[in-house]
Length: 271
Image (cartoon, rainbow, N blue to C red; front, top):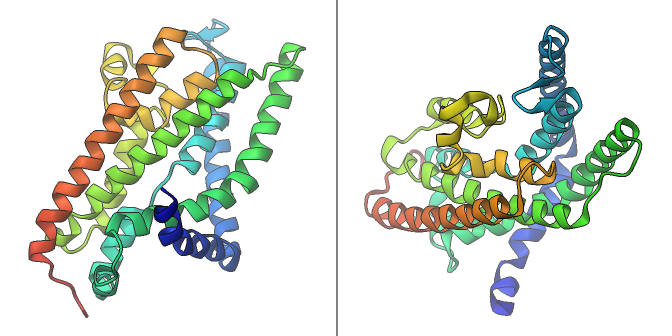
């Protein structure tokens, strides 16, 4: 482990420097995501205002506010752009330089993204989580933060990021065959957002939502958020964390198999 960290530490440092260097791009991207979050907030506010019941599928209005902002937070921190980067590097030929380096292909991406995640954790996670907890305190009249649930939430987020990273890496490796993933990558993002419960909570989808909860997409967003909100029992938490570990292992294996196959038929434009 020490050797691994020593080898890939420069990639993490590069990720941190990239965040600092292109901070305006980061801020505008963040602003766009926050605006999207507030759009969803007003949509759900209209839903609850028009409902005769104070709860909708087990969610109160206050629950939904917390769900929206924690879903935004988990989605932002577990986001991985591996598929976009790989597709771009295949188009411009720069992937050839990455492939001749004496390091693992996937570990380069992973440790570089970890650098950006460190900065995002400090700049985004801490203030938004503090704001959500202050809101819950005001609404409920008492502090609602459970440190055990917070630690389980962070562990679940770590697993969610691993799943998302290797899923996007596996998808990105398809660029070795398709040559350009730009259009399909947008479609993939929309589908994943819906299936993960980021657009609509899976609890609202009945039997279909129960089926989706066992698929890897729910592990990306829905599982961590439900743990944070305390809406899972201890047995459910253990089950869904175990399910996340299973899906992580599956996508690690898939990414290795696809890469091994794709390397035999690499064709790049401009390289």
